[in-house]
Length: 350
Image (tube, rainbow, N blue to C red; front, side, top):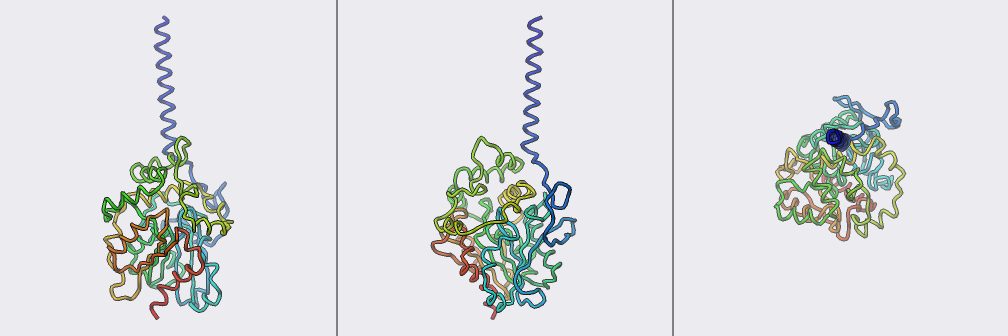
């Protein structure tokens, strides 16, 4: 009788362990749903938004002269853990410069960030088509400029691939690289990959090889997750830390108010996942010099190794490469450099 009782106790323990494991697996691979703006329990809607063809809403913000009087129209793509209010040093451009250029710049919340609806099926192509749709809604005309910083700079590769016929010019600013793009020599990408902190190496491994575990990896407490997402000082250069000490971010609570999964985690899965194209296979979208593509990078960038940007510039000689000595990742927040980056593709046509 005792043996029989112990047998059933072991079966119950085994069943409980299996149930507990099943619950853990479900919770690890099923993040909580986002708190969508404008829905019951979700954040309020405060920004102008457009309704996209698939029913999602995209929030945006306009800067500079009016659309009607603008000579140059730019769509700006924000980076990781940012939103439409984060536009480098655009707000510090003088009124004289803005009016002299006839500059109208639109920033928008990438899907999931700020007040834009999440997009669980987001891809490099889908975000490029979102940008095209935004430009059409704002009546930007047949061609417009695009500019992106960091993770937003990576988005510009998708614009060059999927909507090149709509571009008047493109600027990539410290664009995040995907270490698994096949165009990189294996030794070069491997060497650059191991320049990251070990915890960031593991974060990207998970995002690339096991994206379904991205939520779990970035929310578990057993191992250190992304140092970049946590804003650890170790991922910034000396100049970056000086710049950040002078920047006050009043918008951070709004940035990920709909949840981290469809913002930070989705960025990781898309940015470091398997792409349908390799940027190093792209052709010059302006063969007759009717526009230009610029890439800006700091030679002391701790987040995105400069060696990979140099290689891209060599592989794609039609890109105008600007390397900034002594700068890290946050150099766009230096007003003089921000102004130079905005002017570069616009004034060379004169």
